Length: 100
Image (tube, rainbow, N blue to C red; front, top):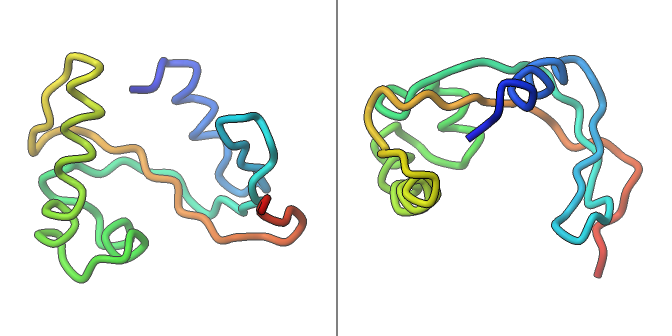
């Protein structure tokens, strides 16, 4: 889903503060990106599973399969065990209050 330039930009965020912009181009929140790494859909890294709020890889895949299948279908790609996910591990930072 990333172009080569978008992938490079995502990987370059590790160790930086980033402002997340919503679809209307308003600042939503600030994050601190701690790590950026690859994992696969079939064997997702436990940090991703936990960060998404799931107890197991099976729960992760069951909970997100429809979302990922729809997203990839729109781009003409199948969701398979070897589908690579680029993960940005982050924590929320201070500075921008969510819009009400």
